[in-house]
Image (tube, rainbow over all chains, first blue to last red; front, side, top):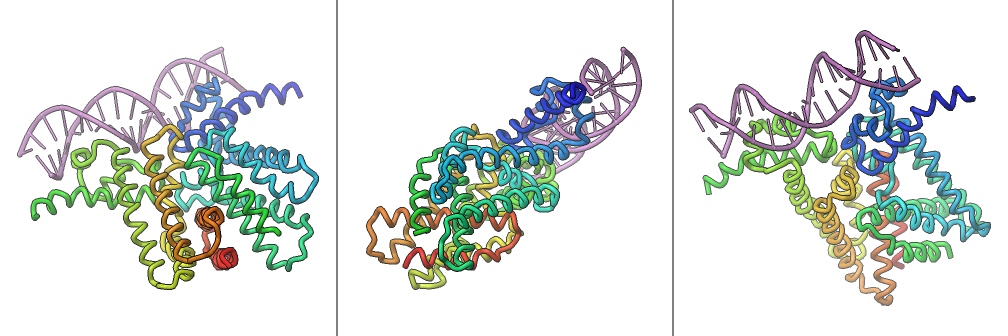
Length: 191
Length: 191
DNA sequence: GTCTATATGTCGATAGAC
DNA sequence: GTCTATCGACATATAGAC
């Protein structure tokens, strides 16, 4: 246990610095030199724990997926009422986007930073968004609507698109003021 | 006239190469060396026409704005029927995204490539999206709905979010198969 | 496992010839 | 206006001491 904590301390410092920098500045603008400087480790220590910069990027996205879903669930599941939970998606966006300086979605951002041919990176992004859609579908299911399955899957897709669109909108305009209206739009869609 | 064409030929070649590369690969992954190689000009010729790489980026976004809106209007205004025009927004997305190898929106992508502090770049993106929302508002106005102004502006915003969300979705999943359903969702929103 | 020092390449940008 | 040659800085990655 002690040995594990000790040996992973450097790795953790690197991953934390990289996560912050990749998210705030983008992948290609962030150099390895800056990562190791802010993590306060030596360059060779970095290459001991990660075999390349792209490898670090994969680790960053995997951890980000876990962290972000934790934040999302924490906000949504504050309420036990199904409708409030669904609308909680947008309350989450308000808090998360404002608290992250409107840098938007780490996964959408990373897609823009690589050409389409980087399949390994894009697969991680797709998995993340699959999970998001599945989570929205679960929230919609719990509403107990009497609509047909077909209508429900349309509804899930619509809410998902509004969710993604909101992230982009807030990232560009650097404000969350639009979200109130969007939450009301979703409320109307359901009834 | 001849002199102008001749003197701007190099500039045009550079801008065309840069537009393609910035869009396909992202800004930071694309080096000046690659741009001048594919434009088949000398490096000093590049710095004669543009004072920096960032300056080239601005020229790229300004031309892209003109080009893209031209494509959008051309598709939307094929019909003279107001509802068909509005739905034409999504027909446009189907064709454009598939024809551009699902690289998505040049403006959303460039935002991801720069830290939030690059105000000059972000302002160009905001102007572009303002214009898009104004165009959607115009299409919605022409429907001649009897709704209140407040409801209409909510509708414009909802369609805009669905539009942006669709771009992101198609970029990630590299398919336009979701768009048919989204167009039907918009049709229902109006009636 | 972590360090310093270094290898090798490419970056954005410039000087000066023509 | 376009060219070749080159600058200094920084990129990713590695070697070898401790």
